[in-house]
Amino acid sequence: MSEMNTTTVARPVAKSGLLSSRRRATSLKLTVTYLALLIGGIFVCLPFVWMISTSLKDEGSVFIFPPNWIPNPILWSNYSQALTVLPFALFLRNTLITTLVPIIGVLISCSLTAYSFSRLRWPGRDICFVLVLATMMLPGQVTMIPKFILFRYLGWIDTFFPLIAPPWFAVGAFNVFLLRQFFLTVPLEMDDAAKLDGANYLDIYARLLLPLMKPALAAVAIFTFQFHWNDFLEPLIYLHSQSNFTLALGLRSFQGEYGTDWNLLMAASLAVMTPPLLLFFFAQRYFIQGVVFTGVKG
Amino acid sequence: MSTIAASQPAKRRRGSLQRTEAIWGIGLALPWLIGFVVWTAGPMLASIVLSLTSWDLLSPPKFVGLANYATLIGNDPSVFQSLKVTTLYAFFALPLNLALGLFVAVLLNQKVRFQSFIRTVYYLPAVVSGVAVALLWSWIFSPDFGMLNTLLSYVGITGPGWLASETWVLPSFILMSLWGVGGAMIIYLAGLQGIPTEMYEAAQVDGASDWVRFWSITIPMVSPVLLFNLIIGIIQALQEFVRAYIMTNGGPHDASLFFMLYLYRNAFEYFKMGYASSLAWVLFIYIMVLTVLVLRSSAAWVYYEGQIKGK
Image (cartoon, rainbow over the protein chains, first blue to last red):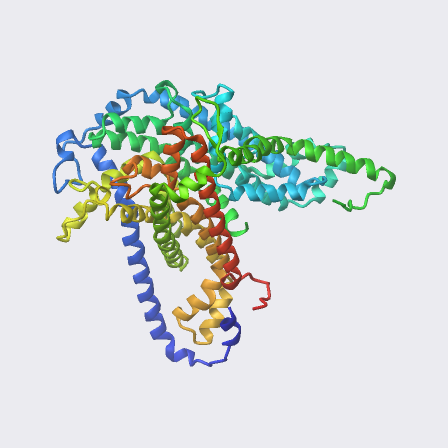
């Protein structure tokens, strides 16, 4: 912005005289800041509070207006009831399969690809990397229907394969990009030194670089977890029988069958939300690092 | 591609070393290469062909030329309606999210106590998504017993029907999107923390007010991050699906018929694979055009440090 460079006109300020009024202005500003953050924070938290409150109410008190924020009586049994009317244990097992298998696949395939893109020279590499960036911009909808037809042809409909096979082929361009940027921060001389010691490329990747990449790998693992845990569209398209449902699909059919039992619906929803929330609390550092890295340095 | 290898003492082995490196390089990228062909490039080409056919998956596909595109432009009011809904949503939700996210980030970037705790709280909604969140908000928007109308009743307002009202259903979705503002905030915050404090101090010595400093330091310095958030935001907003599917299923009277929802119905409820493919291309081109426009315009408003601007 040009005005930034041109308006540097020296304007000497009598500092001592302004100090007390400036300090007062600063403390007023801070008070307003805290107030705004507090009000915003309350609005952010209220839906969660509302959810917990509803999840512990009995059927009757859900439909009282104005509602009580503190349930009376407190029904913990809503949770066991909500999670047993449909086979949520089975849904959990299915979700763990469709979440953990992709995580392993993504970590291996994306880190190998990123390693190759960042530290090895081969003809066509830069063109391929442009393709990676291009797929980052590509919304999945264009490929959704042909992929469905392909999986149908392979007989994979109503199996987990459409959900767990593609992640093993580094399809997450975002992850490849993130890991590549991280690989680039490690000096190349380290590889050369290892090569002189007789290490091959796989040794360098596995023994030298991967240990340094732990924070980035953690970020990728967390993003992948979040994505597959919450994913709805793909399971909706590919999984049809209830015994194959993931938690997201289970919640959806729960809504279909018990749509007005808001207390049970909220209990089940909260239960499904809890693992990502816990993961975020415990791995916050990696999480934020990853987000920031792609947003600011990308 | 000609590459100059780092100077190696054994020069005659250079050629074979380069070849080894290339073989390893391609080998390690092979999973990606296969994945790109099978899950991205191949399906994209197939999608173009499919969009020129009429196919219900049962009888063999029929080549119909550009008939699908002619239908969606001239003969299908739902296409226009869904484009309108999606565009309106993006047009209001995006700027609000970007501005509010920046506002919160600027507040948090001051020397406030419990900064990381507050940041965590604001980011929480961005961590959860999908069906559970959609169900939560269906209940919040419930006209008779929901949280929103409860809060409004405290100040003597009788709230609208929200998701049940043709007028209010889109504002409801926009309001709900603001709950996830922490996602944009956290990226801004990182950008803000990268601005050298000397800049602000120098401006303060020059007597620049907070307002001036915000517009002439903060905004230019954070503009690359703004661009990132904007592009990600466009792509996400135009692909809105889960919430529409769970919360309103497009209703009332198609007032929340998001484009992706209409596409999904055509593909997986009406089994019009050809027509749905042509819809997918319309969405794709729409997203691309918007992205390119934004990127083009960014030369005028994005400031990159260390880059001398020609204009």
